[in-house]
Length: 287
Image (cartoon, rainbow, N blue to C red; front, side, top):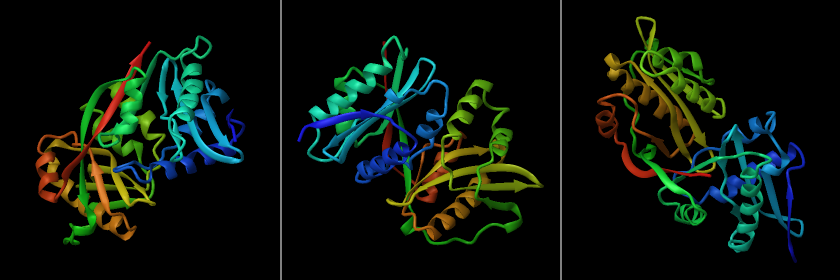
């Protein structure tokens, strides 16, 4: 049966896309939890149904490709397909989505996407289509199954919350980073589906703050947001203790993170048991 393509029709397609992405990426190592970026983009003024296409073999969904954009910047998705549909179906999806994003009508000029180092098929596909590696950042992970529950710090110094607080993160970060960096973080964190946050205080002042996500189907958790007072590096340890205990209770198996933005934090992560497991590969293309 011939493969047919159609573009986005309504909000129900957002769930269709997320379910397919979860299925397609489940076997890939160190894959993150899906974000709210497609949903937020679909509600924006720049959204166009031609930004996402779905491929069907009869009535079966076998692939999709999409992008989200802001101005001339486009986060271009990989054309995910079921096994056996690689090749022509992927090219058709990519050409439909990228073709519209790069058209004069839409106006995309700068394209980017991130992968993990081991995702060779995805990296090779984007390389063949003119993308180059812009940056590689190491990812470290802790095997939570091997972590014994240590004695926690004083509970009065620690707080775990179900919601991520931008204000706590901003307060700890604003005197060390330029406003444009904070603005980029805020926009990104708005797309993240945080599962919980950990706050460490000293004399009623926040000195460490972590925002975490968990991908339930694979057990991979991540520290997505981290802010620390330079003079309170030791506060990272109780924050990690609380985070690990919570993750273990939720059946997470690994905790991943980039190097935290504070001198000495890498040594503490290593002492805690984190090991480098992969790299985040940022690929880009400009036209």
